[in-house]
Image (tube, rainbow, N blue to C red; front, side):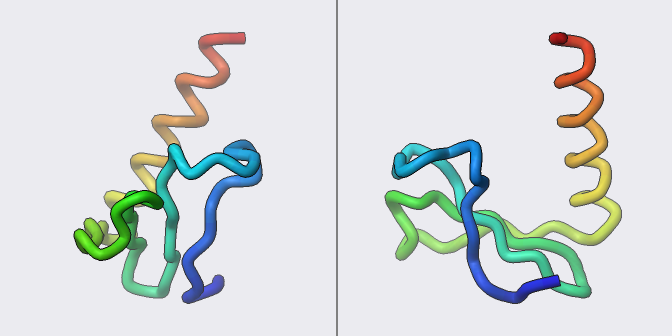
Length: 62
């Protein structure tokens, strides 16, 4: 688990996305274009639930 900010490889070179920083106590999310505006923090349970929801919605779209 990296404490560095990173973008999804799916975003390509675009700045129209969010950056994620995963850490032992959850994850932080910020807007790539407005980094100075701060970030949202999520607990491990919230972050895992969000990821499960994304994976579930992706499988329903295929």
